Length: 308
Image (tube, rainbow, N blue to C red):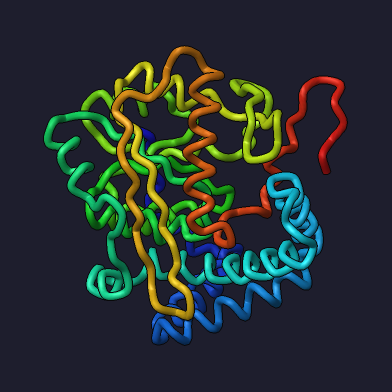
């Protein structure tokens, strides 16, 4: 497994005091009643929209590319809701790291197929490739799932060593371990041993190990071949899930979708196209909570102009 960061006295160096102050403020905020956290988070998101004009343009452009039938008014409303979700994503990170299991359980429920299919796969020692699409509820969704079926989280080490340690500590509250997203062999070993591996195939990770397949209304979207590689070499079941925030500060639902034990693995392109269809289904369950701020279509075929 990946060597995980550990706490050391060096993390208390004055250069990190501002980081620690921010962490302390976040801890204090998430001690508030959830309905108040919800209002603060949405407010922070609307405020952030004023200062993140470039990201707002990217979100609008992504929506224009994916949903050309959407009116300008509908796109504007979606972007505003998306930024509210950005603010809530920050609060939910603190909730995921600092809330007790009891408080988390009070504000969340499991819907869809429930956890029985996952538990059955675990009992049969079948690996589970858990498809966690990049929703802004990502952190709290991982915590909710881990409370039901602990697994192994895939992560990118943070450049700030305090944040790197803290995010690992927070995620380990409901996970068995963490693994670097570049450790493909480690993921395959874990899946072969019957573990749950959280995996996100929905972002644009560049031209290396990608194929161009449809995604919503975009004909050529660079899509990772990682799903094909992991599923083919591990024989894992693919289980999508959606951590959806309920409206008006009513909590969360962990929406479990039907497992796929025999995904199409003819070739990388076939699997990538199928995976994008699954991702689309997930996004449409909570489109305003998806990470539209990411330049999903930045990688283009050679000689084709940028979409941004």
